[in-house]
Amino acid sequence: MSTKSKNILVLCEKLDIDFTSSGVGRSKLLRCLGQSNNSLTCVFDQFHETRTPQIEGVKMLRLVKNTNSIWLKISKFGKLSAVFHYLSGFNAEFRNLLFDWKKAIEKELHNNHYDVILVLATGQQLTTFFAISQVKTKVPYILNFHDPYPEAFHPAFERKPDLVTTKRYKIVQKLVEKSLAVTTPAKLLLEHLNKYYKILAKGVVLPHPGISTSAPRQKNDKLSIVHTGLLFGQRNPIYLLEALQELIAEELIEENKIHVDLIGPSKLNETTFQGLIDALKGVVNYSTDRISYQESLVLQESADVLLLIDFDIEESPIMLGKLADYFALNKPILALSPLKSETTRLLGKDYPYQSPVSNKPVIKKVLIQLYNDWKSGQLAKVNLDEQQAYVSCQNINHIFNNQVLSKL
Image (cartoon, rainbow, N blue to C red):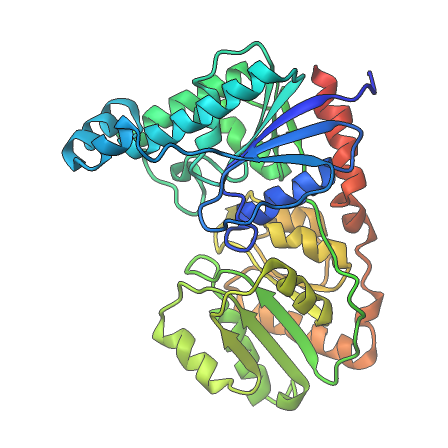
């Protein structure tokens, strides 16, 4: 395999680092790839943020958007836009965005020589996928799936695809067939997608990178458990809170010796959930305030245990982005995840602090073990060195160069 530096054009949508999990994940991946000997230029878009990310080793080019196109004018006529939506899979507004992407890609390919195109998309929108499908070029491209696509194929939301979804799915199928390689952050996701795209032969597992901070670690006088990020129905801490409430009532955990932080946006409106938060006042700090990605890293660094809440389903094939950061910190993880999940696969089935999301008896046993290990100083002996190395930039670049670019 040649180790010659490659000129790579990266296409990245929704690079909103403090607003979307995909924005965080993409920025971390770019940060790692920027440390390689390859030359990277990234055309990116943002939906919320306006500050251009500064990523060492990567030339960043913001997507130029046409705000006065015929497609935007058509989009104001709902019924006419709907016709395009159902005929092609894209409404007028989305077609305008695709045209902007197509124009930007063609400009870069015309003005510069690229060896390969890396196409990064969000979980469901896949604007960059559909944009590259409209570009005629001999430059090979690599597709990166963040989640199961379409959402109808996600185990947590499985259903029969509607007409528009089916049209989009067929476009992605053809893209996959023509691609140089397909990467996913999880082995189970690669296997899951293979049911719909037949990608095992060209698929490569490229895990989410982990980022840690240099903040000094502190010794807490309470067992500190932290979760940052979105909470919603399928990833719900209610069983954990019920287990904790019962253990305190049973005096198996001292109320003044444990503290749980649940920080970030929430789609939980359950009366039961709010009642538990009220009942555990002083033990659980629940805040829906949005904090920056950097602030979340600092908060995680200060904790004794990092809480991960996966989907409450039989099989979860995705690798949650925060799991990579947890591995980078090399701290104990309280993992609420299905037995068949990428989380369990990476932690190992014998990892002591894991339970299915809604299995309260098991959660209680795990909490008691965590609490007793913390009291006896045994938490410090938890070793996730292998996992830490797995999500390192060094390993990310090794995989990308030796398993992905080697296909050129």
